[in-house]
Length: 495
Image (spheres, rainbow, N blue to C red):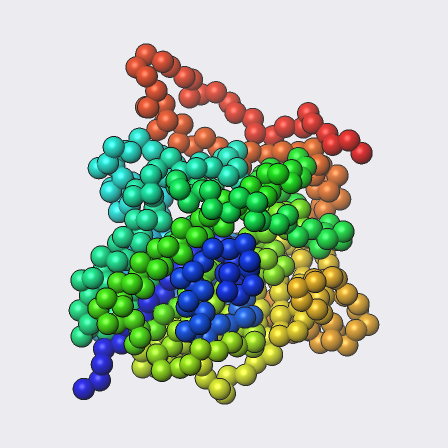
């Protein structure tokens, strides 16, 4: 009799590739991921199909590049209408469940092919979010920003308003352990545990907030940093606060809290593994750990994502495949390879038109993978191999070519035959972009650079002011009709 197969996909949000202690990050505290690296295949050169959340995740479960599924940013205007990997597993008889963040940009409340969905999404309707309903039944029902306070605090390190037992990371760990404890080992199962952290705000609970003091080095910021960033980095820095200048103390503390969030997730991963081991299910479960994209974290004097530099474009990928020995793979691969890999393991025939490939098929050698953010006049694109990378920014009207990693020193030359070859392939990739609502307005980069150092735009509006007003003492009134102006041009950096 064929044994039922189990697949466990653990995903974080915005976790850099270089954040695991056993893989060289000496400041990280990740004992459970460290142990996994000794039991799995470590894919050292895995790249995201898109350096933002929703397109990367849609590529992961559809097996298609953003230009084909239509999501090139976090907009709901997409072409893809299928249920991808989740639906195919369900149709094949698998019990399919997701716990945590999925970031479906269209039909956010739907199952998208899953049979069960336990949500922690910050959904507009609190009654549709399982974590919010849980929190409203506790003495911390007044906490609105349970993932951390955003707006002007978005990149300010902060201690969670919640104790550990009510923190979203702990809740996802609890729900995953609960699922595994009730699992029928005779039923084929796909489970995805998806943590929103270390996505900002960096808000670990006590005592996890004090783990990394002084161990963190300053961000990587070579002298040529400004030459390596594109239009999207300038725009990000303006609304994430870094255009006002670099504060090394803040950046170091930011890294402390970012890595503390990762350590807290690692603790949950250990609990999840222990739940499998207690039932004797660990060894024959396909276990995958990855993230949707990375985070600049002060590197190149930038914050956020939306870049093809390795700090964001490269992601951790660990795969413990039953029956395979631990190893390291140095071939370039992509998150969209997870769909065919998982379906192949489950014995499900693959759709004909896929961009992804089975990670464990020896015949799937390829030289390049691609990545895309936005489209049209603001499109940002990458082609990358084991040894080099070419980036194109439509807004900047510029190419960057990197031959040696992780140095990332631009060596682009139109006379370089390798640049010519990769440029041709990248242009063919761009020509296949079928995404909707492509940007058409030309970008004035000179104007953006001119205003960059004195324009500070608040990250978002106080859209939840009414919720916060309701928590004020009786009789204390505020005017909800105040016109807030988030653009300030009164401060100018000394030249």
